Image 1 (cartoon, rainbow, N blue to C red):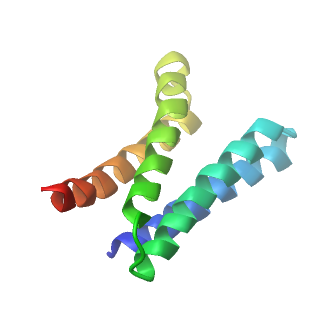
Image 2 (image 1 turned 180 degrees about the vertical axis):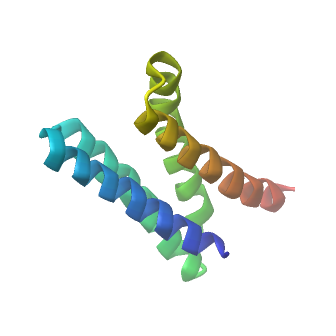
Amino acid sequence: MSLDTVAYILASLTAGGGSLGYIRTGSVPSIAAGVSVGALYALGGYRMSNRQPYGVELALLASIVLAGSSVPRAIKSGKPLPIGLSLLAAYGLYSFGSAWSSRVR
């Protein structure tokens, strides 16, 4: 699977999840965070698919932000939602981190 496809999938999952969190509980932080991180993933995917600079870096940034917010909550609460978000972030960190690392060398 190409990196831009991975970015688009992660964008839809995070934005959709944030929207669903807002619909279910009325949580404004959920929709703000979900749509913001989803937009970073989508912009990164768009830039990668058009061979523009900084696409991988934007998607990596989105993964770092997602991991930074979800991993501590997953450790503290042990609830399924933060654990799932942490797994998405870990997959993004691995995928985009590997691509970025191979370019830097």
